[in-house]
Image (cartoon, rainbow, N blue to C red; front, side, top):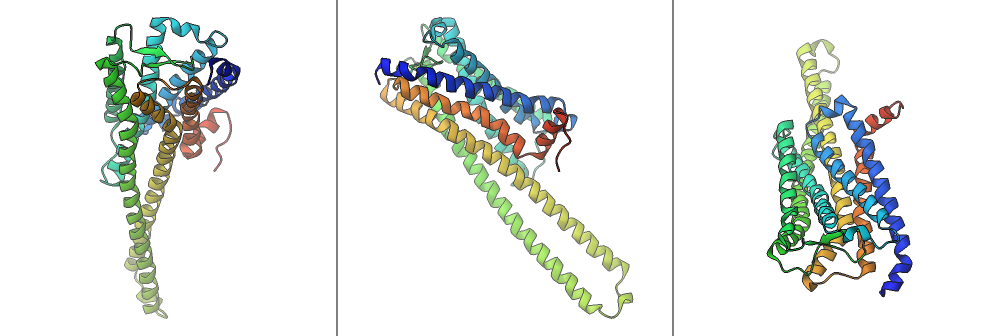
Length: 337
């Protein structure tokens, strides 16, 4: 598309980008504030993983809102400053990759608990994983600084800075290759883990169904045996029935909680794939062709990752009653049952 044609739609795309990213920043503040104000949520071990996801989404959407809005009408002139461009490129890379690695940590934690039947990772363990993940990502995001003049350049849309797809410098090529692997291999690993988790949940549901059927048949058989002679039904037998019922009910409730947890996690993964899929494809195309895509293509693709930061907190609140109740309390409303 000629540059003049892109200029005619640039204002519309910039407006959409500002609206989406601004809404995402506000949306992420709500669950983050609810978590910090709710001791019950803070006591949950895995809440650190959700907070890592929320913080990375908030930082990314806030930064993009300011970057796109500041460049309105001047073709992103502030990104022509080399220092600003490098810092913005590093931040974009860090916050985007943190999201997918956090989803991987969530899937690993769910796999350990549901499939291997281990205890949840402790808070120190989860905090350590989160800190290490952020540190590693920041480290490799800074590698392009080794490229003379910096490895990040203003993109065709003039919305933000990203790795130079035409650079042949080893540092830039290494980081770009790692980014592509992180955005493709990581979702594949997450998919494998959740395949095993869903299989385990299906097996558990079948076993629970069999146990419920056996328990029901056993109670009916004993009732027929004791029919007409209530005195023969001892207190020990009644206690045995009660104990079996409690155990079965506990297993059923635990299974329901695990299924709800997996549904929420899978929803977050699906949102990530739908939002970042086009961006990953664009990275691969640029890497293969050795040149950036057109202005319009890059500008439109830019909108999709922004949706990820907007939808994540919505999924978290809508699909987890604990967060939903915390949000209601934060706004002074009585939690709905």
